[in-house]
Length: 315
Ligand code: ASP
Image 1: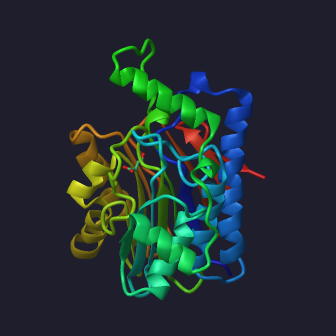
Image 2: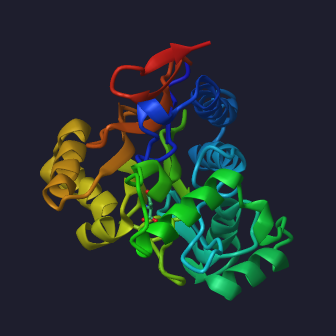
């Protein structure tokens, strides 16, 4: 009997309902479904949680609807700087990269940092050089750019110049992708990948690659992946805070994740996260209008949703 479970997110910076076309809405939902299937293909065969979260995040990085890999936002200099992390709850090994510029799938590089280096976090040119050395696929910056992200960058520039007529939506500003998994052997893992914020300062690093902030996993406790303005999550140590609440205070997954979201709400931060506890239970809380999200429960049922009222089972 399979006991595994899987959850993903595509960021809490979702598109306001009115701005979706039927095609873009379907594309985002299909992207979530396909990423869940990629992760579940690993788990349903008795594979490891760490392999499942990598597979799901790679699928989301390759999809243009989400702010990671292809489709990542542009920084103030008009460049892409990508952050990613992965953590294996079995032994709490972790790997991360920050401000990488040429790695096609940043989460794969994070995995290599975890397994083939003696570091936890590699940044900028050093991260790119390491990925190249490891034989990972490298790309030009143009690979990451989509027409939509160029438009978002131009609008951010207009805002800076005080020329903006219509307010920028959350979706134009940020987003992230992530996955958490519980496998048949009882292991937990988490992975997160992002382009960060549109028009972020060059060199700015968010919470995604900071272990204990945007990404964390420990067997028997919890796996967490976060989305929202990273500075708040770094200051709160959000994903580790959830683990500590469960581990030291015996809080339920629901209570611990709700408390973390309440703290971020108090800070004025639009926030979301996905989490799975040591028994495979899933929580997908957010305080924003929507969050791209999805899950597969042990019975293999795949559900995806963007808003509060459209979370539904897909075939
Ligand atoms: N957490 C990401 C960052 O701060 C952005 C997001 O999730 O929206 O880089």
